[in-house]
Image (cartoon, rainbow, N blue to C red; front, side, top):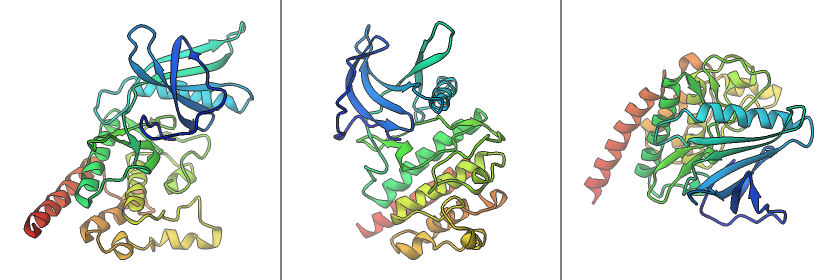
Length: 292
C-alpha cells in the first residue's frame, strides 16, 4: 500500500467530507481493508494522512486490529526515515465493540519506489542506505517491519526516504498466527511461520533491492510450486549483475547474500548493510569522478 501526496489517483465517488472531525482534502489510495486520505487538522489546518477502516464483516476485524497495532508501534518512532502515527480515532457501539478506526499519520510528500526510482545507480544505493538506517532504528527498538517492498518505501522529490505501513510490524522473535507478507518479497521463515527476526527484514530488503536493480521479482517460497522449491533452497536465483550488467558485482553479491533461504547465512543486521552499501556508494562516486 502506497501513501503518496503527489501523482494522480482516481477519486472515489463516495469521498467523505469529514472523518472524525478532520476535513477530507484528497484521496491517496487503498490498501487491504482500508482507504487513505489527505485530511486537514480542524485546529491547525495542518495536512495529515488518515487511514480509515470500517468494520462491515467479521473479516474486517483483523484490519482494525492491524490499525491499532500500527498506532501502538509507530507512535513511538523518532527517526527521520520512519513515518510516525499521531493519533488513533475509534468509533464504538453501545456494547463497546469497535466498528470504525482512523489512524492519523504524518503526510509524506513523495511517491513510492514503485513509481519514483532514483535516476542513477549512486542515488539508488543512497536511497537504500536510508532504508537500511530506518530499519536499523526499528530493530534497535526490538521491532521487525515484516513487509518491506517498493510500495512501502516513499521517496521525496529530493530523494529522502520514509518507510510506511507498519500494520504487520511486530516484536523480534514473534511467531505469527497466520502467514503475513507480500508474496514477491516474503521471506521463507514468514511462509513457514517461524519466528521473525531482523534477518527477516534483511531478506525483504534484498528482494526489494533485487527488483529495483533488475525490474524482476525473485521466486519465493510463497510463489513457487512444490516441485520448484529446490530452485529456491539451493539459492539458484540469477544474480542482479547477470540480468543487468550495469549493477556492480559487489552490490549484486550483497543482494544475493540478503536473499539466502537460511536466515543464519544472511548478513547479520542492517548496520552491516549500511557499512557495505556506503563502501559501494563511495566506489560508485569515485568511478563517476574518473569518468567525468
